[in-house]
Length: 253
Image 1 (spheres, one colour):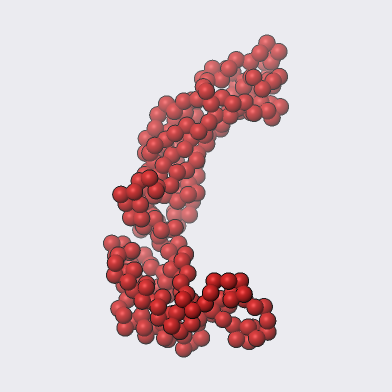
Image 2 (image 1 turned 60 degrees about the vertical axis):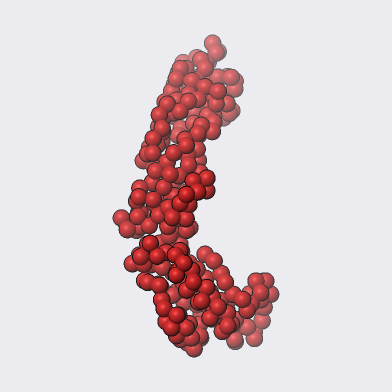
């Protein structure tokens, strides 16, 4: 969310004095605010008239929010940005504050991949992990699948199209970050040298870790006696992937 206000300095003192005078006549940071839903790019006359109507009604700030019906190919277009600049100027001339609120449809500005189009190096990287219990030495395997974004489902198909490039969360550039074993005594064991990515595709990856054998002192059903042994414990393999579809940062497995 972006704030724009040419008339009020962005300082704590300007935001709130904490006095009774401000309570009786609050400034833009504390006066009533409004959401201004844009279903299309408004005209210049609509912007001037509606901002004046808000100011006349006692509102001193507003948030421009594009809605699901807003044409996706017009979002962040030159015309859209020009009208946002006009709205910011009209608001500032009336001592008002404006915010550009995109978290409903565009979710941190992804715009279905438009915000990183042609700039793959700016796509997000996410860290995933899988934990597998270890019962014996040898190679153990785990998989990261079913990746989903927890806060996009409620928007259904239209929301997925607005958030993901192509409407589906996809991943590439899978990279092994590390593999850590935890003994029965809670001691960490670095198993990264024996970790592998066996398969990777846009939906997930499969990993494996070579676990060293237990020492003779580690009997059946007993925990390991030192950090050199990773049997009878759990192993977590961590991988990193780049978002190939501009997904949210809180994807979960």
